[in-house]
Length: 192
Image (cartoon, rainbow, N blue to C red):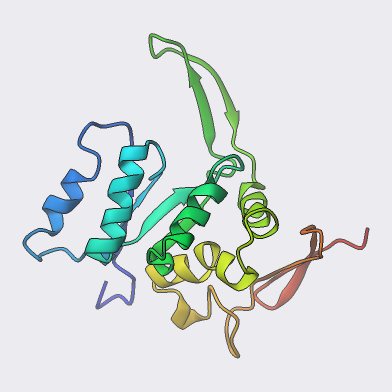
């Protein structure tokens, strides 16, 4: 990444493996690999995995990514924030339009649908309205933190600054989308 100007980071998709984050700890043990170059995602697959993820953040200085769902992500985020765990290392992403397969007991595919695209906004809304996080803090896992991990803040992504990319989502007091600006241009306006 140094020569090309790229971030040189890796998203590690976690499954249901028994080793959880053990391979990550082994990969950074000798100092060859920096924990801030790897972000494990789907960290809330189990309590044990989440616990290891919190340790990854607290003791290794790494980042973790939580896949948003409207039922529990806000609770996990509120808990992390309340415990004063490094909230600047917590990212939230969605599987919006990704596949959500359903399997039977024998692991045969029995159905598939697309993931909804509104889980990030719903999670953010619940985090502020129902869990009481200040807006400026609740925004970070969705904006500034991922931009920091991917080294995009220099390009003005993840924050508002003069000369930045100006990607802005405007919402009203009811957390309904009012307008979307991308690269400084309005691409959606809800006058309803």
